Length: 411
Ligand SMILES: *Cc1c(COP(=O)(O)O)cnc(C)c1O
Image (cartoon, rainbow, N blue to C red; front, side):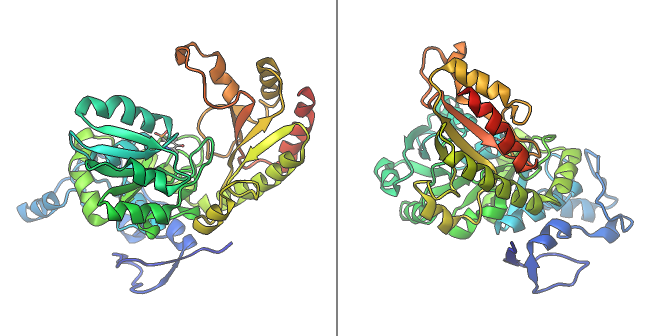
């Protein structure tokens, strides 16, 4: 698999003298933004673990004060280690600029909050990430911002939900539990028609398998915790957009709420990024094998995976995505909760029972878990108890299939 990226803007790569150059993915992950002669020609970038930066003259200090977003003044705004990561993330998404947050949720919240005022309305795809849902339903209403959730499979549903005070169209394609897609190009067309700011949570695909900004979306957000870092040891968020949009978000939501990443965590993500393409490829290849196996198994009701021909939006996935990674759900023919519990526990050595995904380790989140939680307050979960969300990490897929072979006897 070779993915070719072209420089979409003029980059300040002082040390490489590449004015117009065919930039491939490996170049971005391995070299972009890394001016090694600035730090003793070290191959790996330094962790600039400093809260603030000093200047000897008024002229220098004034120059830095003028653009706090791109010059090291104070690490809440700009830090040289984090700046390397910002360059790479912007280029990977085909965006002019990016910001790195201390969590994906902070990035999602900043993107939304920056584009609404009291009295405004947001149209959002249904079943977004849980904390995006809570932001819209419990936090923003306190400040007079309304919302409507829409089944995003048909773009016309978005149109019907738009009101005169709608300002934001929020997408998550696909989502990370039932994997419904939105036709991103059609959504962008609609957003432009009604002058809405379009935002897309692109965590599922990572910048390697889908680029909403290249399809016209205004802001892309990611949980950097997932594929981008990829080692289950950092929580982080990424936001990509135009220079103008990033400057606007930097000026308040980023600096004011102060959800910046630490230089140390940014460095870990830079290290994780080196192998992003390899990890994704491995995860997707293994997932295709496991999905094919499960789809043929008599104890399996269905598999939901955008890269499987059985997915109802397979054509759309092929059109707007370049791949689908390792996250999917499967529904089993189990009769009761106890059977599901036994089955999932039997798999727990191979699929760790844990939230999150995108790391090296395979994971499972059984929906049956939520059926016995008191915190639901009597609200019945909307997903069947026979469903499990799986993430396939870097393990041998044959080992995973062998484990299924054995545990499925329990159903
Ligand atoms: C995990 C996740 C988030 C939130 O990211 P954090 O880094 O956990 O704050 C947002 N969107 C999606 C789709 C996610 O999977």
